[in-house]
Image (cartoon, rainbow, N blue to C red; front, side):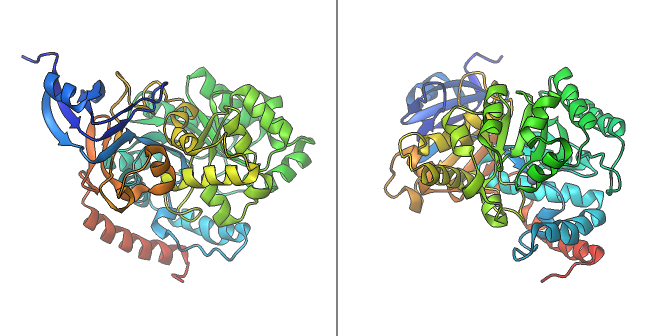
Length: 453
Ligand SMILES: [Zn+2]
């Protein structure tokens, strides 16, 4: 017979950073996990005294909620990571590299590249990722995520601008989107999202239809907008309006929408995002890597300071490269502080919020994840504070944002399952994965007719 105090796993010892509404921190803390949920939080002594279950010693560690990555490309790029040169214009990178790569990708490549990225994200403490753009095989991407034990959202890219590869009429694109929502129901470990490529590649009919689809199904919509000034120019030519104003006129903005980037905005556009509670996935390393002008045009600091719905992302492994949300947080906070020279409003604590509860709120999952609270899913990250960055240990918020990165992640739980232990995946043979990736890289470059420079 199971008593009320039987748990599946007890985490005992160390500092528990809950990120709950009071931002409670429990010194020498403990957490009980049962059926994938957090069922008790307290001191290690109290939890150990009241609960039975397998024990995970977390003394000398900092336990935090699983981190949120709101924009990460899982397909094609991971197999050719750090190979697209950074000395060429973005149009050349898209047409000479990304285009041929996506044309040569096979279904098994999509699963492999999703698995590679999922394992890497988990090892750096990210437990939830919103996939940013699968061209053809969302079911294989979802399979790769599930094999690694990662939570997240998948979609199937669609666009209806004629003359482009994979373009289809708006009703066909929307039918594909609906199929993804049906295949990956809300509440599952991997959920379906309505996912357009965005930019200027969707007609008004497709944009409005995608927003209606998300709203009517209680689901989320994501697409790219204004990482560079090109989208601003395109929308002004199209309607005389700036992109966010155009989306507002179509009725596309709202809490169901997560815009990737939103770098080139004017003040009125930023106001519209705040008023409509539209969320933004902010990927600062990608902007620096690609030289998009974020330090000139970005308004993310104001969105963050004014309570806007902002999550962090790492974009792609050829645009920002390392999918480590700790690095994104330190850069996001650092840029905001430098651009505003306001040292009081945006601090390391803000960065920790963006990585956890604010990130979860921006992707619409804060009822389930983003903080360590009773009843929430047990997505937990154990940072080993006995390594170099913890000698001696400082304040947890300063350490987690400024003083360490994913290197100090020791163990990771997703939905109560230990998916990383001792810094290695428990579900995936990482040596076999590495050799499979090397073979796939060789084959993909050859089939795409690209050099390994
Ligand atoms: Zn992207």
